[in-house]
Structures are given as C-alpha cells and as structure tokens.
Image (cartoon, rainbow, N blue to C red; front, side, top):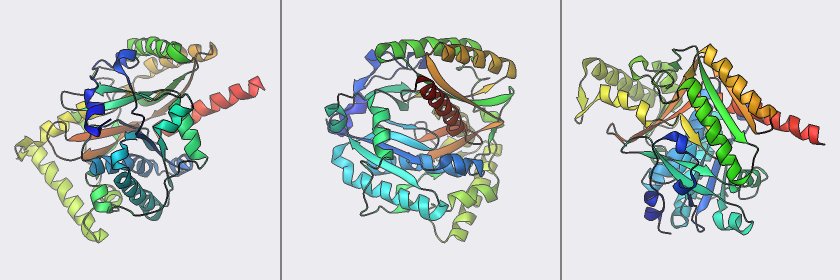
Length: 390
C-alpha cells in the first residue's frame, strides 16, 4: 500500500474510552515492517538515576523515523524506554540508516545499548499473527497510533532473541536524524498527591480482551477522571524550564552544532530567550510562546494503547487506593496483569519541528522510570503466575 494512504485513511477517534472498538482499526500493510526499539538494561540504568537519559534514547528512534520519512503521519508509539512503529518498505533503506545512527549514538554517547529490530509484517502474517492500527486524535491537527494484536509481543520476543536485529551498514547524519529532539522542561510536579504510571495487560484472548479493558478503563475513569485538568500530568501554568546545565548537558550530545561546549551555549541561550518571550507574552513567527506552552497539554501522549493500556496521570492518595483495589480485584480474578509506579513528578521528552499546532509532540513518562518500573512489577506478576502453573 502506498505510504501516504495507509495511516491517513484511518478515521481518528477522539474519546480515549473508544480505544478498542474494532471498527477503528485496520490491519498493518503486509509489505511494511514492524519496528521495535528498546534500551537494553533500562531498569539498571534507571536505578542509577539515568531515567531521563533512558527516555531521551527511547524517543530518539521515533524522532529519527519522523525526520527520515518527513512526516508524523505514520503509526508509532512511545513506551518509555523504547518505541514501536510501522514503516513502509519503500523507505526501509533510509530508515535503517537513521536507526543505525541512533543506535551507535546511544552506545557511544551514553553507554547504553539501543536494541533495534525490523520485522517484516509478511513474516508475522505467515504465522497467523495480527497487528492492527487505530488513530487516536490528540487535537485537530495531530494523532498518535494505537496498536493491538498477537504479533506485537511475538515480534518483540523475536527481536530480543536476536532475530530481525538491525544489521550494520551505512549510517545517517546524526544532526539531521535527531533534529527537533529536546528535553528542556523540568519535571512536572504533581498537584494531587502523586504521579502514577500504569500499565495493564489483559489475560483474556481475542475480542474478550478488548471488552475487558474497555470496561476496566471506564471504571478507572470513574475514579480518576482521566480527561480532567486535575488528572492531566501537564499543567501549562506550572511548567518550568529545566536547569540550563542539565538540559544542555543531555541535548548537546546530539545537537547539530558542535563542539559540545558551543552547543551547550546555544541551547542555554535558546532556553533563556524563550523564557523571556514567555514572560512578556511575545511571539516567534506569529506564534505566542504562551500559546505554544499551553498546547503542550493537548500535544502529549499521556494515554495510549499498544495491546496494553499505558497511562500517566496526576492522582490523589485516596484515588490511588481506590485504583489499586480495583486493579487487584481484576488480577485476583485472573483477568489482568498490571503494574503501577508512584513518583513525585512526570517527565517530558519533546519533538519540536515548530511552534504551530500539530508541529510538536511531547512524550510523557513518570519520573524515576515510571513505565519501566511499572512494567517490572507486571512482569513479576506474570512470572509468579507461571511458577504457580508449573
């Protein structure tokens, strides 16, 4: 299927509670590739306090794909320490070059291995597996993908075993590949009591899995009101710039300007300038900086679905206890596996092509490795169930 036709023809849904309605989904094109990346040893890196670095590396593969394909209008999803995407066969060579550059950069600049694999959809379909894609509309100008299907977990297993690992070869130019990637906001402090990172996976199969998670999400929404401003992790009026030293230290490692000392000066100057323009409510190219900051909330992925529900939200301790009781009751009934991680704040990793609506996207995770630590808890539940059954 021509690249420009697949994701664009999917009608976006705008109520996240509709995340698993079958009519919202289309099967992934057979000739395309499922791209999966993750930071190997991310849990260890997070325990060492490197969670922001893990997030930046996890988002870098998405940024590389967007810059290579020249559009955000293709299916991708951020998972905290990695990403999942569908890429067209017609662009596979340039995609490989971009991902090789990101992989090398992760190892040489941060000492972390970015594991990258590209699985042909035809190989998954040959095994009778499914990968389907829907489009969740964040706003009038931008959408993100939802994924479902048995092929997702199988593809991840294949890649971790060494199959379909991205080969060595020509690499793209890092400055171009990672253009627009930034991490200039300080951690987003909670206002309700804590930030929760939640991952939920159904234990049921086929249509029953979707029905179960839809029912469960509705009950979660009754407790925490996910669409409310109180629950939203991004409260624009409370957003503050990251310290110049911390922001420039990370971003200068992949900034197009080199040497690094010069990059740090340029990045710091840009942060200071935007701060001044924001205070004065001034514009850049006709866009008021305060409006751009306000749009961060509606251009973020704090709710998503990739065969698992992934949520980051601001929550009171009372509502957290209600949520935990609900999730545990579903687990004890053998309906779900889940992971919940509590932190003081959330993190933003940003991709900014411009300040206009639809030209920037903000990847959300809980501080201290929210998604990765929630996934660790969920995997421990799964391992415990396997021991019981043997």
